[in-house]
Image (cartoon, rainbow, N blue to C red; front, top):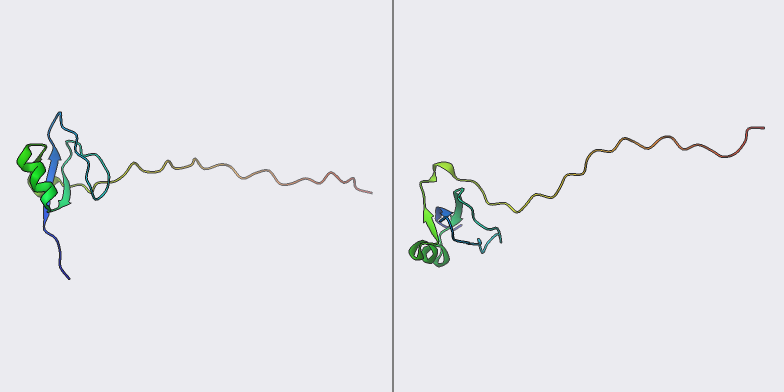
Length: 83
């Protein structure tokens, strides 16, 4: 199986760059991306900078909010009268 080469990049301050694979906007936090013509152009044009791979984070979309755990409902009561 063929593995793509990886690059580690981060957005340059004042530039907005969206990862085309994930749809997530890059920040100043380094992320690992697949080497492609898109990233080579972004580096060449000065939109992102390549950094050492020491502090790589995987890009993620905003996590879904976690619902707060609710207490269980009270036991059901019967409206019937005892005879």
